[in-house]
Structures are given as C-alpha cells and as structure tokens.
Image 1 (cartoon, helix red, strand yellow):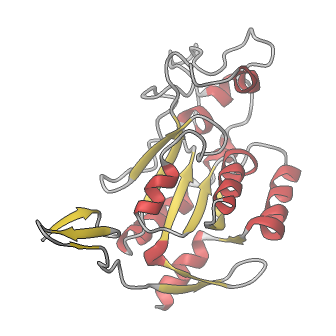
Image 2 (image 1 turned 90 degrees about the vertical axis):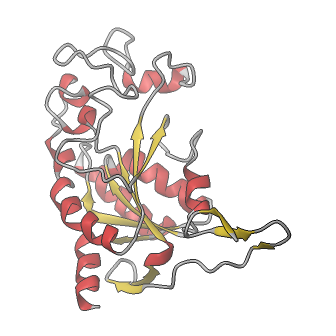
Length: 253
C-alpha cells in the first residue's frame, strides 16, 4: 500500500482499498510546572511556534532600531531557544518559524495595518527601505525579515509567513497544524504582548491548547504590557510555563 500524507497523519491506499486508521506517533507525556496549574502535555501532539525573531525586531540596523526603540529586550529569547529547540527536535516536536514576510506590493495589507508601522505617513513603514541596510521592512526574503543569525533553522523545521499580528489570518498555519495532528502549541518569540499574544489567542479560539514559554518570549513594550499579557493568558487563554520547565521534565524522564 502507498502512504498519502505525512508520518503523523496519513492514509494507506491501494487500487482497491483505503485504510484511514493508520496510527500516529505513540504518546509522549510530560508534566510541566506552569501557571495557574501544573500541566501534562503529549509531545507527540505538540508543536512550538517561534514568532518574529527577525532582524527588523531583534538586530542593529533593523526597523525597531531605525525608529529609536531599544531592540535589545527582543534578543532575550535567543539563548533560551538555543537550549530548548534541539531538545524538542530530538523528541520529534515540530518547530515552526512564524514570521512577517510581506508581498513587495503590499496588496494584502490594509491601510489600518500600514498605519501601525507608519503613523505619520512620512516615516519608513512596511516595505519601506531602511537607510542603514537597504532592506525593505518585513518584506519576504529581505534581510529584515530573516531570522537572526544566532538562531539556526534546521531543514526539518517549518516556515510560515504571516501578514497580520496573528499568524492564523490569511496563512496556512491552521491547516499545517491539523495535518500534523497537533493539538497543543508552545509559544515563543516577540513581541509577547503583540504578535505572540494575538496568535496564542486565535489558537485557543480555534480549539488548540496554548502554553506560553515565559523565558523564550520577550517584548520591547513597557513592563506593564508584559505583565498584563501574562495575567490574561493565565486568566483567559491558557497556561504560562517555560523552556526551562520543559528541559527539566525531559531530563527527569
């Protein structure tokens, strides 16, 4: 028989038979310290989504740097992610890089979203050229839209371009996750109170289990924005844990 699909979710087919019962990966349960309660998750049905760890947000010469925002807090997740991601890959947990990657013509970007990045109309917003690098802000395949050099994207990782704060709007993210048999999502990246938060909210509204990894997320916004986001995630949308908690659980077996 032939396999149609991926190793997590597939059919076995022949000329006269279709087997839709093929088993997915065996459960891999781990229990994590989290808030508001400890949680047990199945790594065989879990993926991590790393949001917007891109040069325009995290590097000198990027868009945030250009507009005078201190980008250094956005670099805080780099080292925790470098510790966590290899361990998750070794457990066959999909690593999904969810990044801004706009069309050069910006035809799917509304005026309201353009305004977020260029409020006066005379600054360098989405698609604008940064004077320090010549890069088009958050345009697909530009330097600014690339993930920072310190984070390695492996061939087995999955890349998804997004065009809104939430990665579920106008993207294939939901279809990819469902075809992988995923029901639990770990969230990391920047900005915690913006793109990470809105993607987590939409994930929970779509029926996924949402877990924010506190040490693998950051924001360049004021501290009260971070605290409000953490409060609302614990109160309304899911759980707050950490990459460190995952590593401890894996070491404990």
